Length: 238
Image (tube, rainbow, N blue to C red):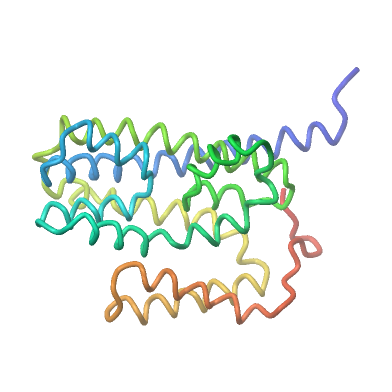
């Protein structure tokens, strides 16, 4: 029997999610190199750097910890900084939980991939099965590339200095997020939410500790109202 129209739509949607996952995975590669180099500069051994990327797997918290420990700070200070920077993952978990079903060990394994990139790709659709697929594609892709580039950065680029910034590669990640966000801005409630969140973050960046502007930007959802339809007429997921 041939494929049904529904099968073809599912296959097309999966291809879109794979492309999104591939683009955002490629965008984080320079940051993995930078972390590996930063870890080496901070005095981490290769095994310690790999442990950070495999077990913590949180870019912002890894950079914060490397900086704090490299400057002679305490482990407690590094842990608190990492917690503050990644507490947003709690909100990600609430959003993604309905799609990430399975046995306890399966959910525990999938929770290790709860990062900005995997959540961004997963929430680009409303279908639970596709959400799970997109989340896993991006999460596994970023996990593999992040760990490979950590090793590469530690071994090869530890003396590269500001090479990533000089080449402009530090803009790759934000550009990839903007590409994922842009189609959603066609819906007015989501546009208002994004705009309010951006304004809050920009106001707080000069005066608040790292991580706080991102957390405070969550308040932007208030302007969207209590009822934001997941799919509006003519604006559903493709």
